[in-house]
Amino acid sequence: MKSLFLTGTLGVSLLVIAGCATTQSSHTSSPRPVIGGQTYYGQPRDKVLWAYRNALTAMRQGNYPQAKELLDDAILSMGGIITNDKAARQARSLFHGEAKKTFIGEPYERVMAYYYRGILYWMDGEPDNARACFRSAMFIDSDVENKAYAADYTLLEYLDGLASVKMSGDGSDALQRARKFSAASLPDYNSRANVLVFIEAGDGPMKYAAGEYRETLLFSQGKTGARSATVRVNGQTIPAPAYDDLYYQATTRGGRVMDQILANKAGFKATTDTIGDASIISGAVLAGTQQGRGSKADEVGFGLLAFGVLNKIVSSATTPTADTRYWDNLPQYLSFAALELPPGEHTLIVEFQGQRGQNLPNLTKTISVNVPTDRDAVIFISDKSIPKST
Image 1 (cartoon, rainbow, N blue to C red):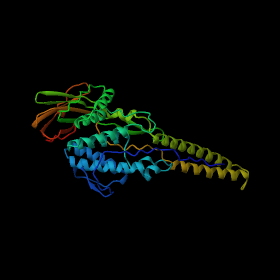
Image 2 (cartoon, one colour):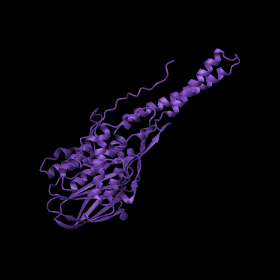
Image 3 (tube, rainbow, N blue to C red):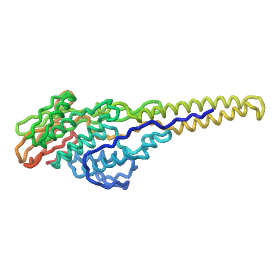
């Protein structure tokens, strides 16, 4: 009898992400300080995840240098992991869990790393590098290999075009694509707009595992208090609707290659478990017959018992559980507003609105902005931000 065996030769096409330029940074597994005075001593496989989380916390606290360092480290690590990672190959085998692989996140999580880095580049007066980040994010969101779906983030397209306009280029094609994706009205580009306000609200999608062996990765929607925003300054009122929804992005991109691998693992686990039970029961019955010691029935019975125990051991060692680690402080909604202000000091008031359009006064942020003469003033605001002058 041939023993049951699962061939682990499912093909996985790995994309090398041609990301935006990043500064060189060291990448070691030694402890490093993170936000709030804590130090992370966890597994090296979780380093990118913690870099994501702490970079966003740093941005909400106005600690942009630390956010840049963390995102640069995450993006550099991400590229190396995608092209050559032993743990990812092991996770596709029967006896290694998906959560043992080095974390880089689902496409929507990787997209957001580039999105935030693009914002930080624009803050530094580098719209060219910002545009490269937005384009890298669109590349991640698209299915380059099978072309089953295309990138569909409204803001990535819109900001790509705006950066082009800022550099005296033509952003009309990007604007047209962005309007195709957006249910909200997108304004025409204004090359003189020198204050760019990036706004986010709500809590992003959460991952959980379902199925008999927790082999199916699913998403649930986070809390959705604030949804959109309004920017007020110098008598102007600029709406900033929700242009992108990360829960939608997480749940509409299609299945993962790993989903099929986990389904195969679950099927193998169930089959070996069933065969193990049947063999043990049959073996016990045969070995317990009254045909005398050393009989053929005894021999076959003990053989079936051994085969059944072996199958139960193999089934127990098979790990089809989906990886539910996730970037747990992402927002749900992404908004944006661009306005033109004279150089100098200004006070911006950002008001947040809920699902029904009602104002949420407890989330209002007041920001002092110094508009320079030689580049755009870029403001990042979350409903969880600690406001800081810029």
